[in-house]
Image (cartoon, one colour):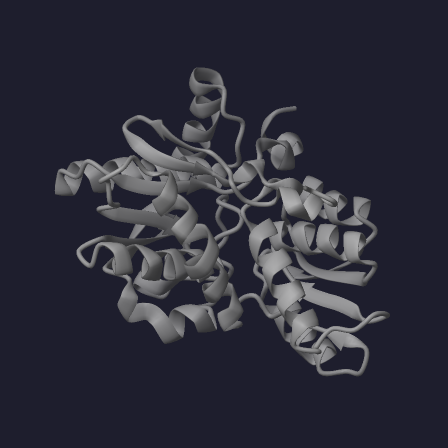
Length: 295
């Protein structure tokens, strides 16, 4: 029996669009894939005694993790402080505040300034910083929960031949990649970056329009697990936005720009290697980008 909204996280549909297996993670409570790590990391911190009643959770986020952790904090009665850079969607800032979180804006577009402040505050008494970009629990969740969930949803006898996912923290592509390679060692694990800011692939750091990935540095998770990825590909922001619009109008799927980028990259991967079973993710819902793209 479900007793809180947190019990509704997970078990999102896996459907086919354009011949690609797509995990509809935007249907999670709080509207994104990040609901999973928010619940997992906060509950693990509670279990290990790192987070106690009366504490404040502080996290640096470009939006979705801040939203998700604010939701979990609201249910569990913690104070929440989200540190966000300027220049991101207004809706994602407003959603964290709707859950009762305090939101501080620092830095411009990239999350590096917010990350340093979250790390500093997390060391203070009464604060807990999950540190999503560096915490191995992020990988653990995706390997133990999301990856096996997808494997269980694929038709009997079908194994993923490739998985492609945008690199924000790196937790999803590394954790799911570990789960998929355990099931099929030949599965290709492919990271995705914006063409305008391909930090991992070519060392560039610049502004782009695919919010939620390429936050201006190489996360600790990727630094430790880079060898798991078979390759990193890029998609242009403008192409991702056009694809996002097509998904709403032709498939009735209302999602953010990163979902458009994921589908473009997955189709290209399928065609390049002549694969039948490529998995990707629609990570957040379109309502988070109303002001930027739909008004």
